[in-house]
Image 1 (tube, helix red, strand yellow):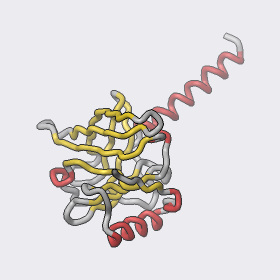
Image 2 (cartoon, helix red, strand yellow; image 1 turned 60 degrees about the vertical axis):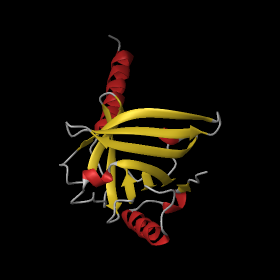
Image 3 (cartoon, one colour; image 1 turned 90 degrees about the vertical axis):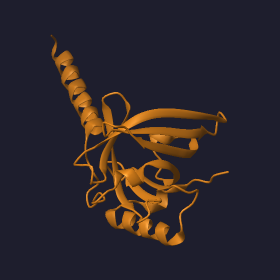
Length: 179
C-alpha cells in the first residue's frame, strides 16, 4: 500500500473515532450539573420547545414539541414533532432515551438513529415539573422547555442565569412562538 493510502486510512479512522465519540458520549458541559433526585414519572408528557441555541439538528423547524412516555422496561420513548416552515409541513420522528448514571439523575442519552446517542442533560426543572432547562454535551446545545406554551418570567430568568453561569451564550437563544 502506498504511503498516501496509509495516511488517508489513518485520517479516516481518526475521523470515524471522533464522530463515534461525539455521538456516543455521555458528556455534560463543563461547570454544568444534571438534576439530582430527578423524577422520571413527573417528567413524562408533552413539552414545548420555548427557546434553543440554533443547531444543525433543528435547522428550519419551529413549533417543536417532544412527547415522553415510559416503557415497562424503563426506556423512555420520545416523539418529536416540528413544523418545517419552508415547506409548510409537519414532520415527526421517534426515538428512545436511556439514563446514563441512574434513574434519579437527569443525565440521559437520546437516540433517533439506531445505536447513535446524543447527550440529553436536564440541568434544572421547576418543582412542579412544568419547565426544564436542558443541554447537550457542549455549550452549543441548550433548550428551554415547557409543558405550557410559555415560561413565567421568574423561571425564565432563573434558567437564563443558570445557563449564563455555566458558560452558555444566552444571546444566541432563539425564542419560539406558538400559534
